[in-house]
Length: 210
Image (cartoon, rainbow, N blue to C red):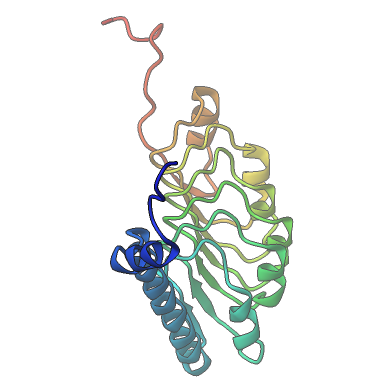
């Protein structure tokens, strides 16, 4: 007969003496998450006083539902969501905060905006730089008072130039985007909007030095 390897009591004692190595990492993650929540609540309270909501660098993957609740009696004038890891903005953001005049969404991981953004009737400045957009969302062209747009450092290839010409925009930064040559040329010919572009890189067939 094979002797028992361990008795239940010994197993329990061994488990107590050798804690799960993952426990430390889990406690650190929970502590960081707790700090992030405290930071968000604190900044929401500040926004009740100055009407400027700064949620930049809060480790957010989305806009917490608690933010809409905390801000329900505040008419926000600006919102900064930069330097997070947000992948999308929900439609209710645009409808709940439609009095914002300045919105900073830079340095996130967004590739689109909800159509409801066109309802942001007071928005004048929008920053979507350093994201993953491959084209400009059509809703941007329909925001009635939008004057300044920073869309630099994305992956934008195509732009509806006709929509752009008819928009309310006065300036747009499209630098550091891989804009297609044909679109780049059309953008260069726009005169009613200040369009900032990076120099167009020649195609291999255009560069006779290769």
